[in-house]
Image (cartoon, rainbow, N blue to C red; front, side, top):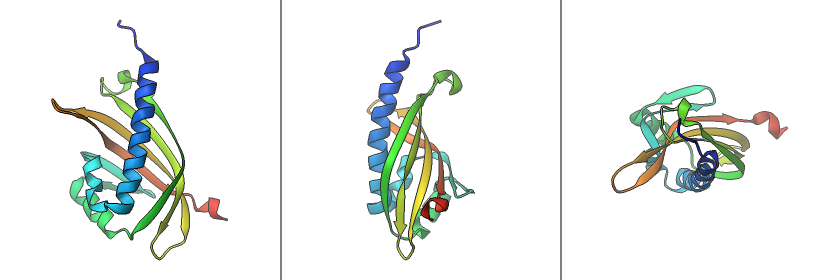
Length: 141
């Protein structure tokens, strides 16, 4: 069995997560129409327990959300071992922060992304395979 360099995957996960978190929240706040480009065609978003799957459903969902201002307090990441993903480079990213949607109070939130690396002859991009968003209203009291 070939040796597995976990440290390399951890470094890759950290770089990917840092770039992704910055890009995702800037996009949702400022260029929401571009947001679905970050998702795989088969991705599922679970928004406060409600599943949304497929590009057209994601587009419809993001268009109905009021404008937002997200603030990330912290995030963490870890590589998912390739034995669990059939050799697909995958990173788990957990984010905690606050968001203010237009016309609403601030909410704390947790969001967990499963990102997979998609490589073409010209570039490599991380795409969202799974996204689970949950308000943490209990933290507001």
